[in-house]
Length: 163
Image (cartoon, rainbow, N blue to C red):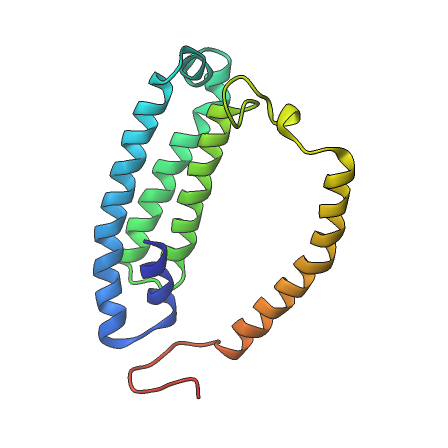
């Protein structure tokens, strides 16, 4: 779904139209799987069902399915309106909300249900070492990504290339 939406944004012609069809097909599959996982996950443990359906928790967790429905509707409307970048942005939003729902379901026990994320964390010295590495490498990755996007900006038209 994400790949099709990215190609809708970046291409024209027959490939563009084919990706519109693929985006619709894959969106149906993705949304169906989201519904299955959403209904199945709270049944895994009583604490998960309580987190999603007990008051006052439901006041906070209800935002995830409501936003997901709104994003899915926006996705379909943007595809029907033949928008270029909006389907990709809506697809990103759908996947981010899925991860948010998973995080809500598992927090604070992210690995097995008996270990909290604080208990599973590495020692402070190891985390500081990784932080230094991230501070050095993340700006380099972001710079290269910005450069790559500037080189390959614009739509790819049939019969053209980047060379």
